[in-house]
Length: 58
Image: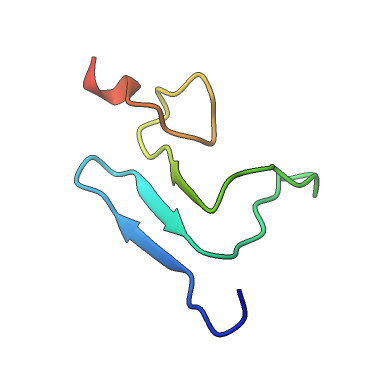
């Protein structure tokens, strides 16, 4: 993905939409696998942290 910028957009409910090349790691340094686009939870209601799957809507 050389030459492409990573984009992080803040969504209205506090989530972060990430698109582009990025390393996502746990606090202990283990890599978290993800696709080229994903959303990070901003409300702490997700049961699949750090990813958001819409549980904030409930």
